[in-house]
Picture 1: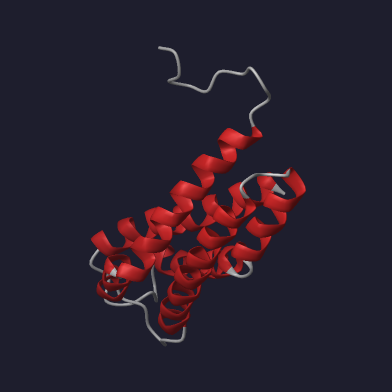
Picture 2: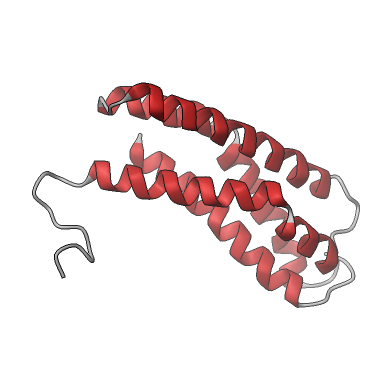
Length: 143
């Protein structure tokens, strides 16, 4: 379950990184260029990754026996709100007949997407630490 969450976080992060590059290209449309064809693919992957993410995280906490459960679940409620807000913005962009670099730049700047990314960084970091076998040193510790 933790590996599934890491894959979902990675898909959203990869989408965001691609969107940064796409926004910098100054394209008037997603038609007629390789990256234009890819932008919708990355956005669709992000939608798939975000759908049900908070519920998946909650199941992982229960499966892994992480404590205190109430603190995790309270944060996953925040994650769920941020994911839903970001999904609404991403799906609005996907509904457009043409996706310009400027439109993607505006999506990148969305406070909803930025909050979501911060949530994902936090979740990913915490769950990675939980997944380390006992006694294994995490990179950067003890150096």
